[in-house]
Image 1 (spheres, rainbow, N blue to C red):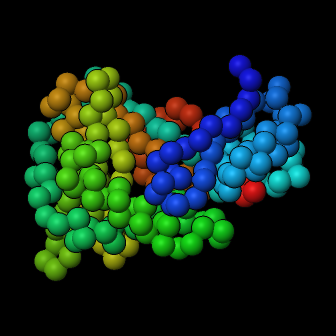
Image 2 (cartoon, rainbow, N blue to C red; image 1 turned 90 degrees about the vertical axis):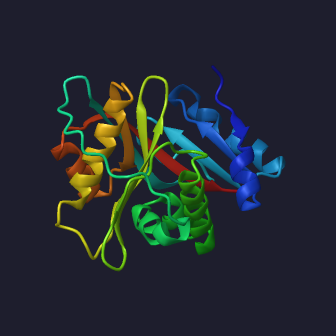
Length: 231
């Protein structure tokens, strides 16, 4: 398969910026600059470069590493179901936006200084709104305290697995086992739908999240190095 760039319509429309993607192949490294020159000539401003391993400095366009995406998976077939499921959230998306923003603290859309700050906030607001209205999520458990929202998660059921989208515990309410409470509810909900595998992704640099997922029984399935190349 020849390495090539492809147009990302959703990203381009949402950010009003022509954005593409390259899935990097070592055998085609020598032509990376040629591909990027072609993308530049076609009006692309930003290219996401995805690779299954860290790549050396191969391009005069200077790829910048902003994310090492780590995907975790849990086998639910022998998992204990406590039957405790937090009620699905029926409030307004704005009330849990701060939790959503905290979940993306290591997002490449937040870390790339070439992207205006409002890009990150707009993206995570869109993600939250579409999760709450069930466009991209089936279940949204939220722990509500006396005066604020303390923890939440979002879950999408697919035919063979359930995928956690957003997951966060408010920075003022950590070390109270709220993350475990939300995660157990996500697990129980998945089991109740006869799902065998639960998946969640985070950034490798998010050490606290990685430690939490591994401690409760998730196993690493893959790592993807994601670079941004501005043209």
